[in-house]
Length: 223
Image (tube, rainbow, N blue to C red):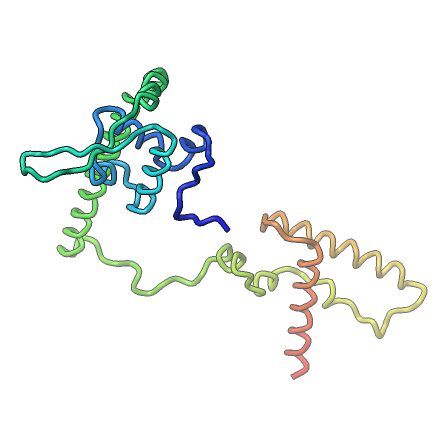
């Protein structure tokens, strides 16, 4: 049984780089190296996912770890590219990955600022009473919403041929004609329903719903 939290060391380079964050991770390591915390911040990957990617990339010979001593004098681990891994920088350059990465980061940063500004302005206007909440009384579900949850009432406004069929008064000479007429009416009803409510639904399901609605109406009338 495969453990999703453990790296897949049987994957090829293409398979590895096809996983979430792998290319971005390699780009950051190949261009000067980075610590675990820096990579976690830049990529947005969870600690578990990042650890998994780093272990697999190291197994594939793309990078390794070195110990550095910053000004604090404390040893710190840093991931740097190997000779094999650094050879992939040429591919990243050919597809304009560095420029694209910078543009993406800038756009993402600007979007985050815009989102924060919107929330701040919204909160201010709400407190000042400029915007009153219209959601105090939730509206009734729309017909489309009722349909999506399978509300049987969606068929109430559609003429049901079963309601007009009186089996006690049918004569043998007209039985075939009546049956044919009902079949035509049912087909027209199905076509109308599908035109107005496009979704994946079978003819059997529609007939079942119509029959159920008819039975419920008959039970109500007999009470």
